[in-house]
Structure formats: structure tokens, C-alpha cells
Image 1 (cartoon, rainbow, N blue to C red):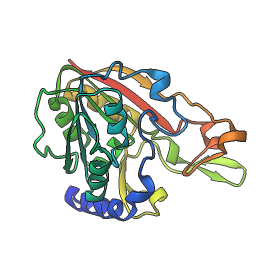
Image 2 (image 1 turned 90 degrees about the vertical axis):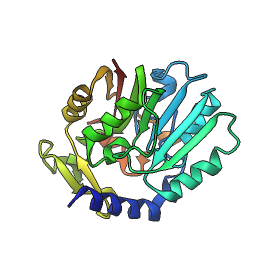
Image 3 (image 1 turned 45 degrees about the horizontal axis):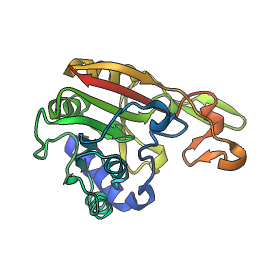
Image 4 (image 1 turned 120 degrees about the horizontal axis):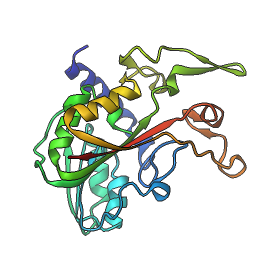
Length: 249
């Protein structure tokens, strides 16, 4: 299937399901069972910074940035419904807000060598063309600018629960686009090894500063045992989330 066909399929899926993701997995949260930005302090001081959200969704991460003093809030997302929701959410922000309905594989008119911070919270893995997307992000950033992203750990959906055991259900090594089980096979998300993300960042000119796959388990008594698609039992064996911080040289 061609890139354009996958993007259209995924856009349709998101337009139909966007509401159930409004406000979910947004800063300071970085992903299921992962330490938060409050724990890691990866972004540092964001006051007076120009920030760009890749896959901004309903705008809640941009709201977090604005509430912490960011000077400019820019975002792009594949779906009209998400952008409209983000515009409404951010309308009272004092910062400049600019949002674009666009696939991350394309530059919808964003300036180059402009942003202090770019980030993508549980969105980058949707890209159909990873190096092309990372090349755009690298160009958007000022020299010395940082890029932080989180995504589902690529071993997570390779492992499946069968009765009281977990088994390796799919090959970790075989990369490529796949219909996604968590979305009832209605969208396509590429499977990539962790090394592919790291090597692609290096290829386009980023310098890796941190790779984090720590697991923070909830207090089951107060927070429950289920994070929708993600379970505590599986998180005890393998991370649900990985996080990378990189810098434009």
C-alpha cells in the first residue's frame, strides 16, 4: 500500500475515533507506565520558548507548554477534528498559537531553524516515512534545539497473553506497516525496531542524549490494574513506552 493510501486510511480512522483520545497521553504524561515529565525534567525551562508539537491531537500537551510560559505554541495533526478541538482548547492561551492540519511527512509551511523545542507524545510512530519526518523536524529546529518523543515500546505488541502466560506472538525483527490490533485492524501503524528509531535520528543529524524505557507501576489499589490496551501484568515484564531525547547539532 502506498504512503498516500495509508495516510488516508489512518486519517479516516482518527476522524471517527478522535473523541476517545481527547486529553489522553498528554504532557506531563509521556506514555503508559512511564515516568512523567515531572519525574524526568527532559524539557527543562520552557518559558519564552517556541515549541512545536508533532501530532498535537486535542492540544493538551500544547496547553501544558502554554501554562508553563512557552512563547509560541505550534502544532500539526493529521485530522481536522483534532485540530478543531485543539484550537478551541487553546483559544485563551496568551502565547501565539498556530495549528496545521497536515501529515507529519509533509511540511505544511513551518519555518526552518526556528523552534527551540519539538516534541511528539505517542504520535511519531504513526509516520509512514520515518526518516522523511525526522528530516523535517531537524530542519524546523534551531541549532542546539531539542527533540523529545515517546512511543509504544516496539516489543509491546509482539507479546500476547495466552491464559496465564505471555508468549512472543510476532517477530520483533520483521519491520513494516501492519494493521493494528488495538484499533481492531482499521488503521495501519508501521512496526520498527528500537534501533531503527535511534539510527534514523542519527542519520538525519540528531545527537542522542537519552533513551528511557523505565517502568513505573501504578498503585493497583488506588489506580486500577488496566491502562486500556496496556496492562500492569505485561508492564512487569516489558516496558509499554520508550522515550528519546535528541538535540540538533
